[in-house]
Length: 191
Image (cartoon, rainbow, N blue to C red; front, top):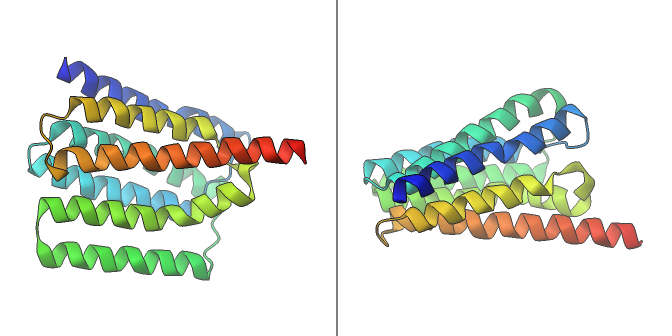
């Protein structure tokens, strides 16, 4: 059963990007490349840390998320929002500080927690974009990514940080994005 949950998690997580990619190509969605690049990098780091600690559900989820984010980065370089404002610089600085802390402590658990913290910081430009221009984001991608994380959390075999932190964080952050986008769409329609 655990293997089925891991496979479902991976399929849902990677396929979550398909509506986003379609909307990018239709010029409806304009991804913030800075966030998606940060997410791709951190997904890879989190995957390596979880897999090194034999937490395969979390590792495969993080790897799947990294692949989906990399696809968005590639398209975003041509069709996305490549702005790099002071806010983005501050977020990237926070990400660099987190990476330095991870290297200092040299622990898979610290690596996962640092990746989550950096991911949250890296999410801020896209969260701001989602709030200001909700029609330039695709809510279903975030909802499906969160659903993929739900399956990965059920596949966890322990309560170690390397097993559950990334899936739980991805559930929460994707829920936040989904709620912001759906509520902003509704508010804008009313206005």
